[in-house]
Length: 375
Length: 210
Image (cartoon, rainbow over all chains, first blue to last red; front, side):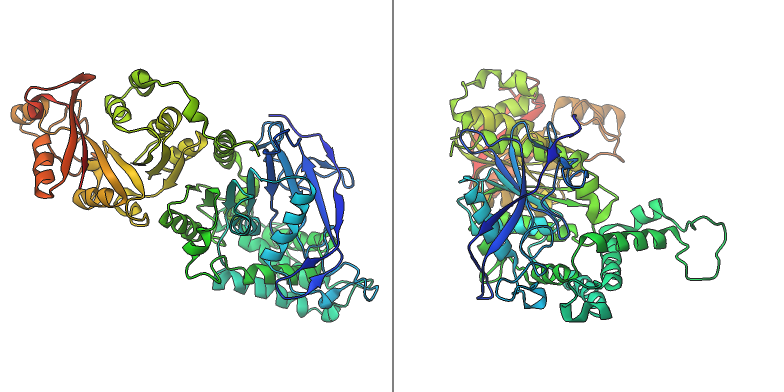
C-alpha cells in the first residue's frame, strides 16, 4: 500500500443562501472542502466522506497549510479502502463547524461581527442540504457512496433518505438513527462544561480569551466515551507519570489524567466552543424516523444499498443502534449488509482499527460500482 | 445495468467452481433473475456464484463474523445474525427462494425455521446430510455408540448437529405440513442416487413450497 504524500489544499465555495429547518435563511454561506482522485467521464465514481463531530474537510493527504495528514488518511488514498485511483473522493466541513464552513464563529454580514449565539440553530438535514449544493456545484449528479463514522454515519443516513435518487450506496459506521438518552447526556455534560466557563460569556468571546477550560473538560469527557475500558487499561492502566509512588496532590500524575489534559488543551487550539454547542445539539435533535410512522417507513424512501458496520467495544454507539437501522431496512426488504467488527478501540475503532473495515468497504464499493449504470 | 446479465452461462461448470455437490444442485435449481436468501451462507460462495451467473438478487445471513467479513468483501450483502431469530424481520414473500444448506440439523427449532422460510420465501431449498445413510446405520449398529462417519464426523460432545433427520423423516414432515415438494435430489458424492435413497444417499436436496 502506498503512503500518501499528496499535498492537498482545502478549498472554499460560496453560496448565496441556505434555508434552514428552523425557518431562517442563512446568507451567504460558505463550504470548505477537499477532493482526492479524479471524477471519471461517466461521473459515477464520486464518494462523499462525512466527517465526525469534530472532524474537518481535511480527510486525506498532507495538508498544504499544516503539513498534517488527513483524519482518515489510513482509509483514503491509492489502494486504500476508498481507492483514489478508482474513485473521486470529496469531504466537506459541516455547517455550523469552525474549519472553513460557515458556523457561529463566521462573520454575520448584518453586523460585521461573528454570529456567536445569534447563529441560527442548524440540523443534520441542514448540513446535508448544504452538502448537496456542493455536490451539484461539483457537477456530480449521482454519488457512488456516502459514508462516515459516528455523526458522519448519521449524515450518511440522512443523505440516503433525503436524496434517494442521488445516492447509490450508504455506509454508516458506528452510527445511529437517533441519539439515546445516554448520548444526549454526554453531549449535555460537554455543553454545560463550556457554558459554566466564565470566559464563555454567553458565547461572546471572539477576539478575547475563549472558554478554554470548559471546552477542554468537554473534550476530556468526549474522549473517554470514544475509548473503551479495555483500550484504556491497555494504554494507561494505573501507570503514574514519571514517578513510582503517588505524590498525594492533584498534579495529574496518572498517565490517563495527563493524557486527557493534553487532549483537552490541544483541542482548544483547533475547535470553537460555540461550534461544539451547535453541532452537539444538531446531533441530539437528529431522529431519522421523526415525521414518519416508523424508522422503517423513513428508510424505505432510500434507494441505496447499505453497508452498516459497528464495533464490539463501542459503548457510545453500541451495536444495537446499528441493528435498529439494519432491521428496519430488512423489514422493507432493502439491500443491506451488516457486520459487527471485533475491536478493542471502542467508538474510535472506525478511525484507528481499519484493516477489516477496509476489506468490507473495498468489496462493497467494488460490487456497487460494477452494478451501477453510467450516470 | 447488472453486468451479470451479460455473463456467459456457466451452468455446467458450477461443480468445479463450488466444489460442493449440494451447491451444484442448488445452483441448478434456482431460476435466473430471482431474489434469493441463503441462510448460513458462509463466505457467500453460493450467493456470489448465483449473483454473477444467474443475476439473482443475493442476500445472506451468517452468524460467524469472520465469514460475514469475507462475504461482504466479495460483494455479497450478508447480515450478521442467527437463523433461529434472523428471519423475523423480513416481510412475507420477500424472496423467491430461501436456501438452507447443511444447517437444518444445527438449528434449535428446525420446524420453526422451515415455516419461516416458507413465509419469507415463495419456495424453500433445503440440503441436509442423510442420517439414514447405511454408513451411519452401520457405525451405530457395529459400535453401539453415537455414529461417527464421513457425513457426521463429530464426537457427540462437540457436534454442532443437534437434530438428526433422515430423508424419510423430512418426507414425513413435508406431508404432515402439506408442503408441495417440487424437486427432490439425492446424492452420494457427485453421483445422483435413485435406488433406495434413504439408505444409499449421503445428502438430500428438497425444493418445496406451501
